[in-house]
Picture 1 (cartoon, rainbow, N blue to C red):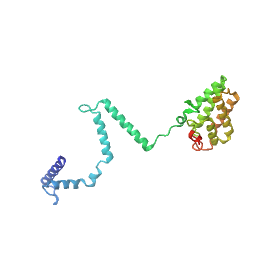
Picture 2: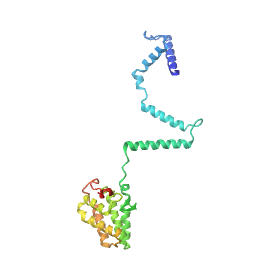
Picture 3: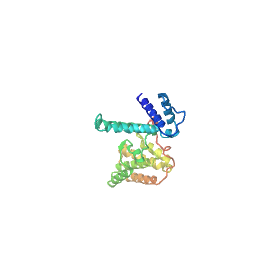
Picture 4: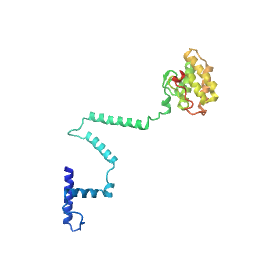
Amino acid sequence: MAVIGAVIAAATRNAEMAVRSSAPMPSDVPVQPTPPEAVELLIEELSKPEYQAARPTPLDVISKAIADWFASLFAAGGGALPPGVVVAIVAGVVVVAIVVLLLVFGVPRRNRRSAVAGELFGDDDRRDAARLRADAAAAAARGDWVTAIADRFRALARAIGDREVVAVLPGTTAREFAASAARAFPAETEALATASTAFDRVRYLSEPGDEAAYAAIVALDDRIASTRPALPATDAAPARPAERAR
């Protein structure tokens, strides 16, 4: 009611000023408009295109409301929230915004290296392909063929995973990896099967391994590193553990 009264009073004052001025005034505008007439005149005036173009958009209104709300949180003096509460509120708003973005746009695609890091043939191994190759070479230099063969085969798997050719999922065995990699590198089908067998023998059967087996895996890793896969990653993905039970 107070707003309407102010509008009416303003319209009345404008009308009185127009009467006092020397400018001619349209005959259809009352000199002393009644309150309803004043409101109608004001609505008619504000409906003109120049006023409508200057109206704030809904986004402008929302943005200003948010800005005013944040400003009130950080305002000094009476009624201001404690700094800890303000930080908690801002953090909550950020979390909600992130959740909304994830729901709208989905989870961001992980980079290649992080997609394959982690469990590898039953072990939680965070080493990248370069580190695995270096560790395998160091083990071979001291005659530890068990470690050399296992680490070089893991390096082979990690390198192929980094290229997004084969995804080594939790529970994937060396043989499953070799079979999937063979679909992407068909010329290396036999060598991949032999390498996976050598890995299984030193890893699970406690066999000592030898230099020849290690050298064969090194040569295989080097060849595949310079070979373009025949199939895209999605077609060469290994079977998940659940599919093996069927």
